[in-house]
Length: 300
Image 1 (cartoon, rainbow, N blue to C red):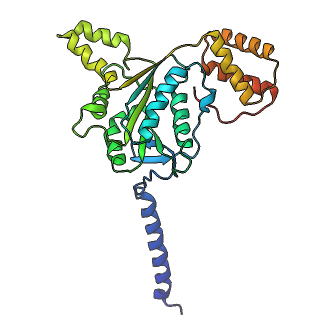
Image 2: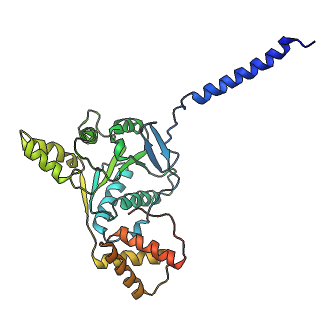
Image 3: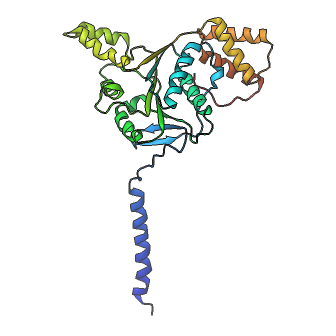
């Protein structure tokens, strides 16, 4: 006769293992490890307070960006000073869509690190923070404040609408808070709006406030916290064609220059605009028709 106790022990052990496995699956994930030496670029995830390393950044070589020479030189100089441990300004890159604002930030970050090949990891960490995560900026700054690495925080397409009050926390973090901005951090932001807010929002404040001047001043003063304002504008026909030619040479798209210029001009007419973004979209179309693959799509 079999002993009932002999059957019970294995069954109990198996049950306990299943319970332990179920509890482990239900348990919240452990806190992620933030290592600013793990890569040269990161994306900030506010809900987990995690800096996700980015192995390969979607960028354009600095030499391919045309028609923005003046702002390129100013931003490069500011970034070089920051990488060298010297004081540098927060920067607002504002202007027309598709004119190379975000592309310039990423290209300069790469160029500065490439100019210091002996530093591993690179001199600068690029940390992207999404617009909707701006309220978490104080937590991000607290995390990177103690790091010896210098961090270039990047917020693409920054703007504020309606009753959005998160701009107040950004104002305090940039300059006005008790702790202030850490010495190892600068913020570069891009926007289609010079004052980060739509004109009608500013006009509404002026018309409805008890003290219109003070109401408007509170909102537009946010952009004053950026030490550098760099304006970007739609390019002329000559610059647009130079951008197209530069891309075509870089990707070895063999087409007679006259034909290339004619096709590029026709493409711009159909899009109703001339910009770096339109030029890149034309190059993508051309490469597809020629059966030639391109590298990662640059954001311009």
